[in-house]
Length: 384
Image (cartoon, rainbow, N blue to C red):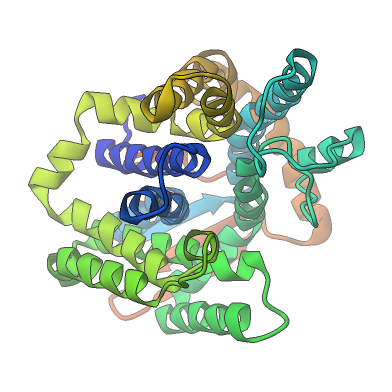
């Protein structure tokens, strides 16, 4: 795990713990409706933090090279191969586990809170989940909704990175247009509504690398954004946490920037126990929701017991199902096998295999060329 930015893993831990707490509070019938439940259920917005972190970690290596040496290369085939190997195998294992859990619940006559599993799960619906066809999905795990959105982002990311380095004004204009389209037109879709959070992650990485002065204002801006998010969120039940809200996206963005600017907070989030949770956060996210629900519905372990089950199960899942694809030589071997066919496909459709970025004192110039692979040297992995 060398080369990772520890405080980013710490932020991942905050994000995943927020989501686990959200589901525990949502399915715990012993927590009465009121300020406490409302506060705990707001943990759903940990997903917004995850989205910002995704944009941050994907853009950080390229932007660090660009600002460090005035040029950088981005190998599109290598990037896609790494994303597929890093994300898909654990997800497929989690889909299989979700099917087993659903089967066990049926056979053992256990209770499952409503909303975790789709009411009409069929083999065809499971197959659709494997390829991220998520129109009116019947999910075996409700948390899987975000995986399809993020997976589609991976194909848009190179273009967003080019746009950021070419014209930050155009980049900002696109984000504003997405907000308006998603909220005020019939053309809006979930991907459009969430994409600004991903784009804010790219901006956060650039701010951190260049140590821009806005970092000093980020803590205050994070607090202000949080106040705005709470003030304007819907008051209807289940609407205040289930709808995409720009206020929460900005809160996540300024939080990421603020942590990078505050040494004491960076040290706190770099503590080994917090970093450990952050490292296994993807696994926790993939498996926790049905297990939290089953624990609350069928045991007397209560809220804290359910949270512990969700975190512990994710950690156990990580060792055999995620770790081989993120921290061993298997990742590079599989990526190496996948990279040539992806490169050939990109060449066939006319997409440059490599993007080269060159920054001058006044403007960033970007040139796409079909050339050799990008250098594998990265200043820090940024926990990709």
